[in-house]
Image (cartoon, rainbow, N blue to C red; front, side):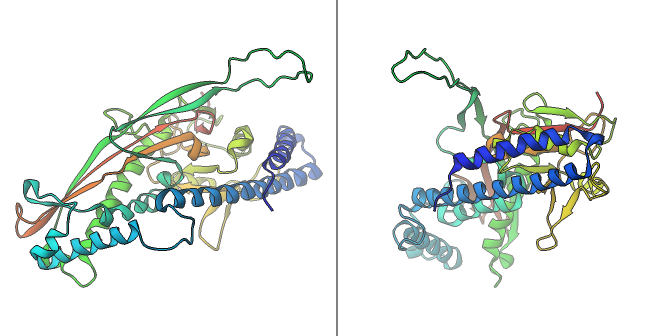
Amino acid sequence: MALDYRKLDAQAEELRTAGAELAAKGDGITPEERDSLMKITGQLNQLDELRVTARDDVLEEARHIAEHGNTIGGGPGGQEKADADVADAYRSWMRNGSEESRAALVSLTDANGGYVVPEPIHGPLIQKYRNVSPLVERCANFTLSGDSKMYLPYKATHAPVANATETGARAEQTEPTFQNIVLNAGEYYTDQRASQMFLDSDVGGEEMMLGWIYEDFAVQLNADIAVGAGTNNTPAGLFKASGTYTTMLSGSAGAVVNTNFPTLFFALPQKYRPNSAWYMSPATLAVLMGFAYPNLNNTPLVQPNTTDGTFSILGKRVVEVDDAPAVGAANYPVAFGDLSKGYAVGIHKVLSILRDPYTVAPYVRFYGVARMGGIPWDPSAVQLLKSNNA
């Protein structure tokens, strides 16, 4: 039976309000109220998981239909078979160089002494961006085509909802209003070389080389999404966007304290919480491992998951971001929110790798070019914690 999202939202909002009231009592909270607060947190997490699971199922089905023209589990063939044929022809020509196999490569060009790797080869490797980059995996991802610019609207003001009798007059409303942000994709490039002996290796050197190139792109994009300057079409960093997102002071110069985290959790609007997570560097997480919940009998703030090695705070996943700022008086070392609504990433659908076996003999040169960008989106979906009291 389908979930009733309206009922889930109403239940979650009631629990959030009750939890905020209890958390606001601080040192005045009773043992019974502490138990209630922990129970409320658990119930909120259960509701969040239900909503996220249902949403992910719907999105996965929609993506599959959009890409393959049928539902998940539909019959094979069509474009998938055509892609496989082109990929096989490319690999065959790279190994034996026959004119017959080269003629099959209708998507290749030989400008500048090289051959462009066809889409079926590198297209599936885009998944490496999500596997290697913990931020890209959770942001709103857009595929750019043609121009390297995209206008993304968000609702700046909410529309009022009024009451009227069945036949009563209804006043004209001018809201909601929307604002646009501009997502620009800058050009990333890499120039890498490998020996022909390596590429001919039994372990699949060609595929390994392409995979490493995509991983390198993903690592650099992740760093720029975290702390990019936002100039020259580079991404504007998540942890640098204090002018966009709501910020909170830790109350302690050059440090964060345990009381910051329940406050930050309940300050995020409930509608963003189902898919929310904590984002911080491993060094910051190590500091938090020594914290306990305020007024909860020294219960550790950070809870480890011994099954998969992840960590959580108030039931929300901690995502480790190597490039996140360290705890320091001028820094924002912790972000909390829903990046699928709060941060947009654009990756151009054409990512080219030129294979050049001529100009740097005896090496084969792989020249990769990708157009990628990122920008803060909905300012209400993410909150930043500044490790300072001013």
